[in-house]
Image 1 (cartoon, rainbow, N blue to C red):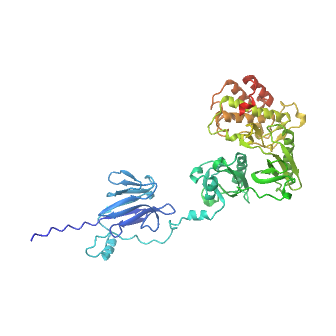
Image 2 (image 1 turned 180 degrees about the vertical axis):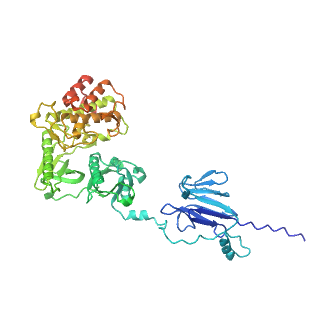
Image 3 (image 1 turned 90 degrees about the horizontal axis):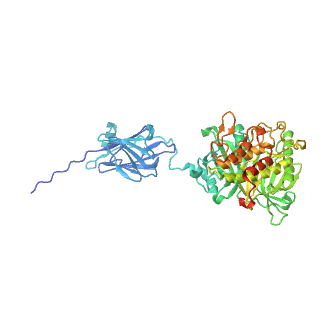
Length: 564
């Protein structure tokens, strides 16, 4: 009878000690699996899978401990003996004697961001005593016990609380930095824009708004940041969705509460994508004009897209309503005066082909309306910027067209005071430029006729857009050359591809340093320098003089077909 083969010795028990922050866990036969993840507060958690979302797992098999990654970003392992770092993505590897584990990101100096591990054949005495109580003969050597139970102090990570709360909010929500950078948008706004949060995160909210609504947003947001008024002001505007479609929306704008931890703006609103229901006949303005949807709200004015129901085809029109919600008689008087001045100016200037035509001026005790032509097209601001400089002759043609319109305006002794790319529309039908928004005009007294070289009139309220506003206009003393400065800024923006807010300025002069950004011919440099001089007395004193100099330097203006 042959002797029995020697019996293989039982393998020596082996355990894995995991340590993260104040937690410790021992793995082995009795606890062969540990799940690694994070709780809703982003703290690392090592447990048995009931209190965290799984990022990775460790399994004990055949006297070895294996780490498997179950995440999208991967798991990093730093081995203690070689300090080698291994990046796992959906893979598995055996763990060495000791080292560290980081979930989803590289190792840094913060110890709270890593899980430390160490293999050991020994358990602490108190755990070994408990192991012996549950170990029976002929069983495989066991490993370890759970950590001491902890009271529920956190929301279970399996509860997707953010998604639950978002599903209860039907309004549009967007959170912005004080500078207007997008911090967050909720799912309803994502669906409206058809852009995910990752696509708009970090973008300027202005880029999502219709060019005609951007100045209104700047006015309202500045008011909120400076004053945080109660109740919160309302902003009506259009946001751009898929295929460049514009969706009208109305937002209430308020500051983020102190509990947010950072300053910023909270916009909550609703979409009015569907046209307003057709009103009854008696609701037509002047028994003729139909309001369809809001375009913008700002200052004393609300602007609507409307239709003229008494013309063939009911063509579109723009309806501007004076808001008479102030209780200050002086404010109401000033607002009515400015509104009436805009109407009178359009009545005089609207016969020009490149200025909107005044259709009606409706005035009552409680409401005042201006009805004018709707210009179908896109704002010049959509053609400028984005580091896309224009060719030099294209800038010359731009000057020709804008100065020609301004020459007509100046012939009626009118200062526009807000010439900027958003107020210049490229008309879709013929590609001509159209100057809009005469709400800030200043009409000079007839006694100043022919006295363009005199000192500007007495100080008035500073009106205009920063960057495009002439220096004397900021001081409340605009004159006819102030609009020439604005046109010069637009030309420089086209030539350099940079907005005036980005262009540097020459120290001690406040002059735009545009010549340091682009090279152009001496002829164009001469023209732009005489448009942009900070001293209004050194500029061209009228649009007509500027046009004459253009004709001398570049020849006659282009044919209309050159703009198509």
